Amino acid sequence: MLVILKLDAAPEHVSKICEKIQSRECTAHVIPGAQRVAIGVTGNMANVSRDDFLRMESVVDVVRVSKKYKLVSREMKPDDSVIDVQGEKIGGSALQIIAGPCSVESRQQLHDIAGPLREMGIKFFRAGAYKPRTSPYAFQGMKEKGLELLDEIKKEYGMRIVTELKDSETLEQVLATADILQIGARNMQNFSLLEKIGQTCKPVFLKRGLAASIEDLLMSAEYILSQGNYEVILCERGIRTFETMTRNTLDLNAIPVIRATSHLPVFVDPSHGIGIWDMVPPMAMAGVACGANGLMIEVHNKPEEALSDGFQSLTLKNMKALLEKLKELAPIVGKTLECK
Ligand code: PEP
Ligand code: MN
Image (cartoon, rainbow, N blue to C red; front, side):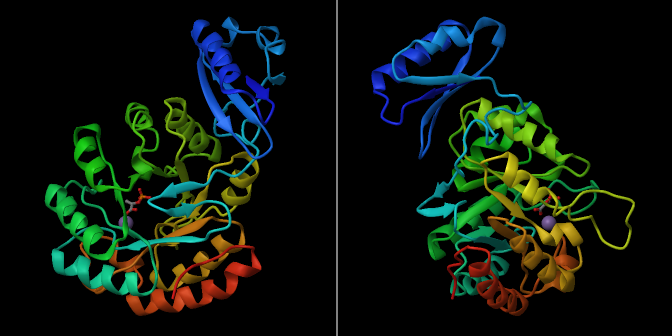
């Protein structure tokens, strides 16, 4: 349910409504917007009715939200959510690029990649310290040492760090380093982990599961928002289909569908989506063309020596060439790409 208030609703009216919602054992979510203030109500709807709120001060209307997902829906919040990550905006008209290697492999490797990316004007650096791998015998990441190295990168280059959270045991550690917590495809439906990060105030980058529908992805985001963390960025990274010539099938349909149904920013990860380095740039362009708020791209200084996902990683030179093309494309789709 959504309680819609006048734009200039007095704070004490907002508090009174929230208190009433809580007294009915439901949760109140205050959603400020450009046109209106709204209070989302989640929990057992049998405890509340429209009439409970209709005559309260500042209330304009009370509406039922028809979708299964509530807080992530555009019905709840018509305006795009814009997430501020240490002064850099994700969502709205900014086109943001998150780039870096699949995994942290060594200090030298990180510097050799982050330095040139920073020079290109990239503000978000990605690399996994904890890697959830399909095989238990594959490289599992540098773990704590990897996080320390990412801290160094953050200090030296002023880049914002996006790194994966694999389990709740490492939450405190990863929170201390990450500016954005990445939840990988394999954990998209780890609901207890989603609830835990919903109780933090760290932005979350939530990747679509290998066999998850768009609605599944939105419901997973709802788990995070339902706990009070509204800073979620969705990511289309390809799904499993019968196709065998590419690693995954990048479902670009998801982008306009999510843009229409949710206010959350949505990114495309063409690296995992297609899995073949020389086909990453066209799919990156396609992602931007269909409305993504940003891209996550795997970049490596020596892709042939990478400990994970080398085959889908762009060299620094190829990343630079892609940025040149994106610079031309961005204004055509009403986006601004700040890079050199
Ligand atoms: C990654 O970003 O390196 C990764 C493991 O992605 P996904 O969870 O989408 O497979
Ligand atoms: Mn990877």
